[in-house]
Length: 581
Image (cartoon, rainbow, N blue to C red; front, side):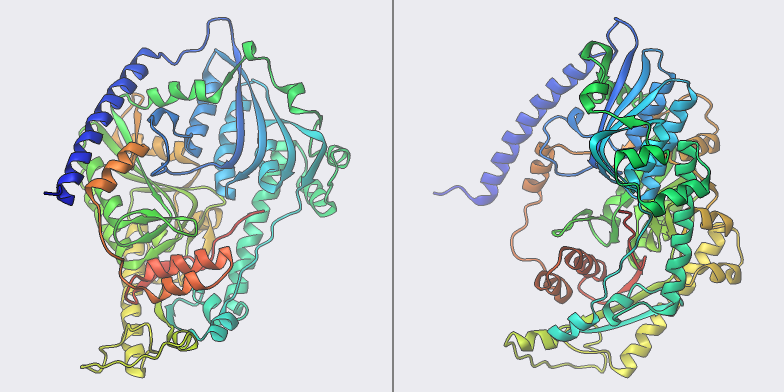
């Protein structure tokens, strides 16, 4: 008789579990046997090769067998640099810099660590083949900048571009059915308009003024220039190394091989990182819980067209683990999210309050902590943001896409039946009726009232004062500080210090990062144990995302589909993502 599928699955699970146990035992032995120390031949230069995506949160599902091989997180890099500043075995830092995937807040986080290193009196040099806005800001924090002789400087200021889909949706037969609360809650505009409203233009220009002011100030500080000199250099666009050097943006030209220290006088990041990670294992600990990506109901994961999303189920489990761990004295919630599902955000907010009953919770904001991202942060004991963090956006929207016209263009003919006047209120193949829209808008109003009420309570403000800075408007971290939406400016290190102080802990603490990074074998085991058969529920908005072309459009529409779920629901999400090129 053929072996049943469930029996085969159990057998393979047992075999893989045995192999995993052996692999983990070997890994532990290797970690214990390695002391992570530097060679005893004298001080060395720490070599950092920075390029591509610098992840803010632990990755999931990577094809990695040993947890020691996980690439460093952005905040681990800052730890490394700060540790090197105080390490007598490190006499300097040399950085080979390629294009990096960070927002302005991420650049500020890394730059803060480099400025701390410079204050130690040790030299820091950067070599690059090209310098865009982000790369230049980061390099300027290091001190000495050298460009390849044939390199290019693209320090040309900040530009933001938004895509509007109204004509495209009309062309394919799709009708947006959305409503929003808040004059500046413009997240639905790209689906309903061909250009921005006056409110959107006002908010975008104010936000860009703040970001560009920060850009100029940081560049001037790093290069020892006056701010008018930086603005002049940016507007003149010194593309060549000679022009950039004349403008004071770089110190000279050199190939990487001419500056890179010899092997016997240097140490690579992958050799130095274990020392920092091992130090994080000491007790007591601060739990750093990462909320990365759009907020959805269910489990966390990655989108098919790029991007990540954080599920309320997984994040709540991490919060509960930290709450119940006696070695954890405080929690830092690291938020890097433009928001998402209102229901999921409220579930997470409630879980945060449960943790606060036991131990302090501090928020560290990354590039984004807006709308739902702000919702999960607003009830914490202390909020720390970078000046360039995009936050606030306290408002809601919701609705659905009516794809009946698209189906008909594809040759599908639909006919439905219902019992109950509003039975089809969330149907993806019909518009809202007048009564249905009225009921849904009333629901959004109720959720907005809940949102600003809890925000006001969390920030110690009255509701009217909160409403004045809410209405869906996005603020930079610097603007948010002025308006009482955050408490302090800085990175994860600042948040950890606040958490330690609130916990009344004077000694050094370790760091417990959640969710834990999982190896390929662990992911495989989980997939086998939670094997699911059959297609997922149909989602008209997700089907629309698959049909429309353009990588940006696909990711935007897929995110909207996941946040809305299979029914139209309330959404607390930033109206845009800002990418600085």
